[in-house]
Length: 360
Image (tube, rainbow, N blue to C red; front, side):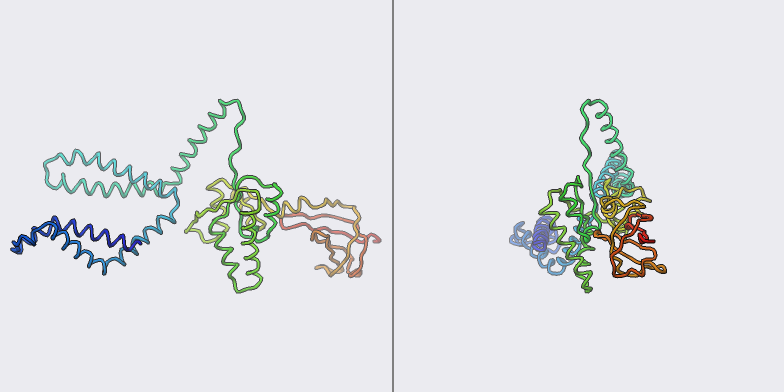
């Protein structure tokens, strides 16, 4: 379709140039026949010549147009808007400066200088808007927030809460528990799935490793479930950061830009978000929070199943997967015994219970 449009544009351009230029060319070559000097014939000859030219140039022009289209489509909307505003400002300044210059009687100043000013100031305006986009967006956002505060101060009725965005990373999608959490209604707002997270998930699903491939496909199934079966709003965002390679860094940058909350169960990403002052929800923290509370001195009945890392230690597990380290429990491997809790260690990576046999 694009190729046909380019060819049609060439034919129209050739016909137009043929009407205006070919009669003078025929006159210069002393072709005075009335048939040749007919404007319809000139338009037909020009259109035919440019149509023949398209067989050589159309592929290059189509590739160039597609390249421009890809750059425009993939460019963030803020970059396009701020760059366009800067370009318009530069062209406006060039027009205001060029009007008095065009009225001068100097041959070069009133013709060439306005053109150079238009090109130069237009370019500088676009670069200014493009490179200062963060400051411009923050300026507009700060003005909007100040107006919003004034309006809220004047109104007596309480304002509605702002729309919150929960950005999912790859690990929490593969984990699968996020779908159950959303289904119970513990998460509000909008679930945001970045395009670069979806691409990483698809790459995992196409892996040659069986385990990775299974995890990736389960993650894709979880996304379909979130979109179709879970009563929560799910949005896709194609915003990407080509200057950033790591997916975790892209998540943090996206969360800062849209004031979103990163949802993860990655311990390292959790620490990075806390360091960069980005709000984060850790699924493991939620799982640990809803586990039964165990306090030192409490008795438990457990099955010791294997050795511990230290000497004479035994290891048991609760039904929810919490590991229990039993001091002097190595002699009770394969047996169910009563233990007394001595201490509990709980972090974002999980919870660990230390105990000793009751008879000791």
